[in-house]
Image 1: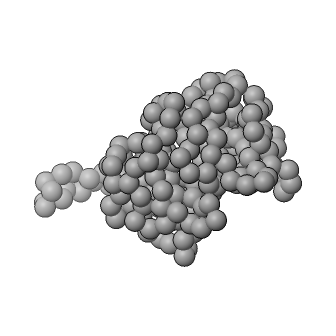
Image 2: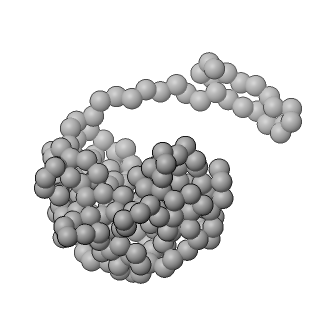
Length: 204
């Protein structure tokens, strides 16, 4: 594949153009090293929060401006392995783990501070998030066993929806509440992908 290459697909009757070739570049380091943290936003307006510094569980929040990280308001509850979605000025953090157990609490970020939101229906950690602060998805996770649970957030409360076909934790998720994607994860170490249409998941 060569950058800028063009060809015609006679079956679909469409012109295809090879994408621009890109590479990863180093950015500046987080202020607090950690793992099992959540994130959201974009490359020039990113947000990360929570996580584990082994020990302790972290409440730290950091914002990225495209070149460097700046600390912002802490989570109300320190936690690790939580779900996250939204933007730098309207983030959502939910679930996770903090002693003595799994969490169902949700926090909403307004660009400087966190406030309490509605609780998840099922407390769990290592779950995935997608969507926005007012139309979020909480997907899969673990509450002592891997789960396929899907919950939708409307800006104030969570409601159960169709389960994943393959139970899993620690997967990747992206998209919106009506066009979500979940891929990989630890069920039995899967490469499986599923697509969400706002009601149910189908194999990708």
